[in-house]
Length: 433
Image (tube, rainbow, N blue to C red):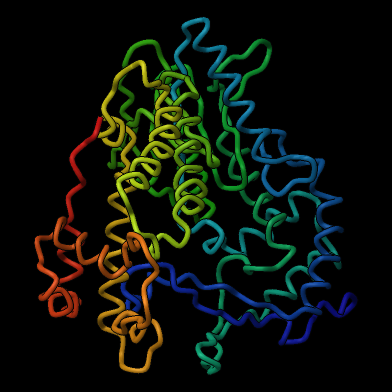
């Protein structure tokens, strides 16, 4: 393989498995394709990756931190945050453009890539070996155990291949070098112009004019390399003490200017502060950990006034900390929900319990949960006041919240669409304070 510069066709064949994301299952764009490659081919690609990296790693710019050993997202995030910190302290505006490329990984022109590899010192048998993985590159689609006919793939890098990341950052590094100019921002003795993490690019400049020049050169370098800037996803932002307009264009299209932008998973603000990013993380913990942990199995609960009070106390204690408030501030719960963009936890619980009720009512005969719901226990009751049954509780809940009497409950809940629309329109309970 090494001497002949050829590999088996199986090594060049990718099996695409579509994974549903969300939306209408009949729409192809709602699926993401995952490409599976030959295991022996991936081992061979890993060997080539190590040899290519030894040659090109010293030539890649310091500003590129993607897919490189000893570097990661924190490198770029730290660099940007310190630049913003210094600029804010000394009242020096920073104009920036967060650039997004359209399907960058899948649009790399291979002819251009081979030229870039030679420019970076990859030649002879090694470049022939790399090219051999792409000479007859093809894919097929596998759905429900069936496979389509194979079709050629003549552009882009191979998904799932160990060699692809280093090829991609070499390609992006070449584009970055071709677009370099005198723009950028001064930070001590350093001039920082375009930090990159793979294809996540931030162009920096001290003025809107310099940023437009930098963007023009970057767009031209992308076009020459067969890439295209996504004007709908690229955005401008200005870090400054006062609001400053930054009108950027890619050809005839104007890029939107924003007050905040999420870069590598972290929210950066035009005011240079990180408080909102911390609040966002707190809300993420609330939604992904606090709520599921507190409400696990809530469909079974019989909610008394005491239970409601305890649930809301736990909820509001957490949300007040997220909002930086205390009970002494005397801010109503409804105001906190509105400020943080969340709905009442009690509302979610009650809606979910009534949704489960509708599920029980529509279960076909023989399903045990549905049969248990309809059955009545028999025997002699113990002395004292009996506990509230779940069925009695949920019947009363539906009467209080939806105005549906118990004798009509199963009939209405059995109409799936009607029941779902009623639950969507369910209002929160009056704010207790």
